[in-house]
Image (tube, rainbow, N blue to C red; front, side, top):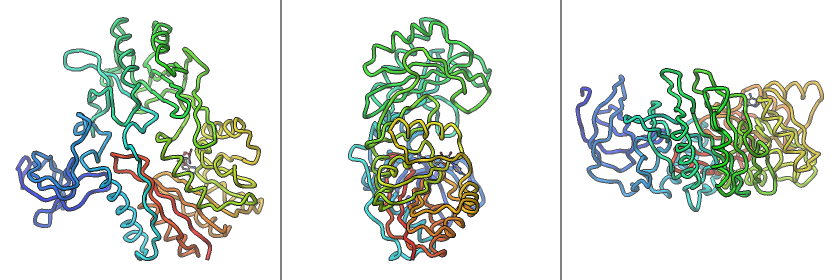
Length: 453
Ligand code: SAH
């Protein structure tokens, strides 16, 4: 096979990031935008020794799980990987991925994996409460905004992403019009010139409050008060600001925020807990599913009101504050100091006096506290990033011997590895449940309950 040569293949499997996989004479082809069961014509693009990447040219025979994507930009845009699959099938795919990883990587037998049905969304669109739109120019020199293409920073024009809120479109229209009228240029990564880099838009789904923060390559935004006046016409508009980012970087937000209107934050709630969210705060992007996932974590923690609980990798303390409603005392540990500032503020905002937060690495804070203060835990909850828990952290958990461990994971491969370690250390997997936080994407969260033998 040579580059640009075309061939026909049937898609048999799917990769972690949602590309279809087809095999031809033992050689593996990854073909984006295809789904299991499709018969397709594809063109060879890039080849390695045992696998290659091909471009979908034509679906010769569509799979029964194939769906017509709703978004016209579904193929070029890098945001969604699974729009070509019916939503029920996406859930089947994700559940299977979790189980396969637990068996293949974790070495669990099928009967050792007590899976509960994955929690999907009733309406798997417009679920994101946050979006960051880059600005640029099209070939005709007109200002455009949208999303980056799959592997490049080419902007795919799209002001109404179907995963985002309906207000995005109107807000982006106002910003674009404002830029045109006042001759404000979008930022150009190549030359490091131009002013407007991104627009961050957030909406509290429960409160209806909206935040707009323009990220600019400069110290000030000319006519900023005019922009604020126009944006204030939108119902729910609560906070308008800009962020100064003059660096040559892929990091979107700058560190400095300048307020144009409102208190500098919006307020929202998940279940009964209220949060203040500023432009730089972390906040879960799918609040509906977050409530389900963290509700499940709370259920699996099995609290009666007497327990001491550690919440490791606690971020802004979303899970900690959930747990604090039902526990005697909750300790949270998180590496990012600003997240802990938010966590403490949110604890106060909700009048919760039984939570305490530590800044530091879970694998350092936990052993240190264990050696020094002989801390105790009835339950330990972990919600680590994709790379999973550090072994030192797992070792300390095994030494502390909590009755239960609740593992919230965004990567079932590292979850499987860590569950094996805990299982070998004397814990039994009691429940495994997927939660689809990101419909149309290949990602999936999992919540696991472990009990000490
Ligand atoms: N439950 C949290 C989100 C957890 S995401 C919430 O709802 O806010 C994982 C978190 O782990 C991130 O906030 C990240 O900053 C933090 N983190 C990454 N490595 C860490 C480490 N070694 N020790 C402690 N926290 C870490």
